[in-house]
Image (cartoon, rainbow, N blue to C red; front, side):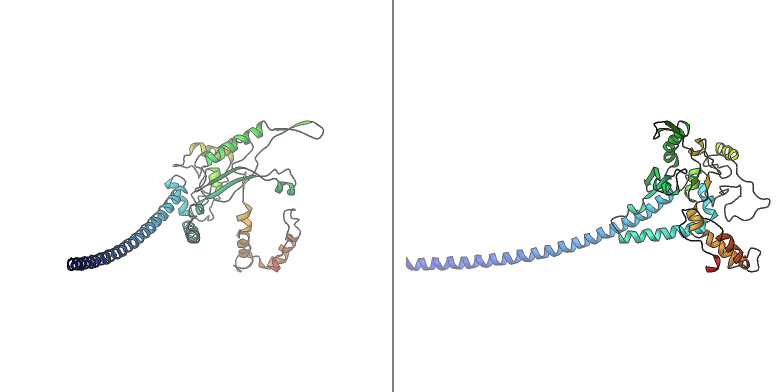
Length: 337
């Protein structure tokens, strides 16, 4: 019995050892398979990440190209023929502006990758002043009756309809108010002048842009490019002519640069020709006056337009001007420039 028990014990020990070896081999094999699967998963996920990155980059590029195409379509006037004529006048300048803005937009995208949509938003306000007020009170009481906010230029029919309707009520019915002596008065409001840049002005007037055919706001110069001297001189635009052109025109078939009627034509007091005045910021502050002065004084010495020998006389005329209170800087003389 003792020998049988010992043999049985030896067999059980051998079986346990063989079982333990098999379990160890199985564990090692399982661990090796797990490691190989992990490496395969890591490699697959890396490849998927790269594919996703490549796909997203391609989608971003396609979206950028698509957004640029949409912007060009949105910024058009709706008439392909008119856009080509307007671009033909100063295509070189427009390309330079587009290239510059596009480069700036791409730089903003790189610096702010999460704000790509906000870089395309535009604000178009209408600001009004009461000219009977003193200059100080006038500047302190600027009102903004309309504000357009979006990715494209405003639709002027939508933008101006409510504004013009309220102005018509103000100029026909007016505002009733009581003074300090409890006397009732009625004040009517009239729109007299409008100052806007060269991009907004044709949209407000519903006319061709300055670089389009018959794009001048004040005369019937042919335009379509540089405004060269014409003989005989082109006639000036009149209110009656503008009204007649607007009634005959359509966006696809403009008449003398007019594409159709504007909501501003409904106002009794506002004039569509003389009501739009040259805009001070771009006409004076941003270099036009400086350019003309340079042509008069520092170039073309042999031409009749050269005025360099009359600087002292010009300075006397400039110093005799009494500027309004809005001008805070002292008058400069040409000899100091």
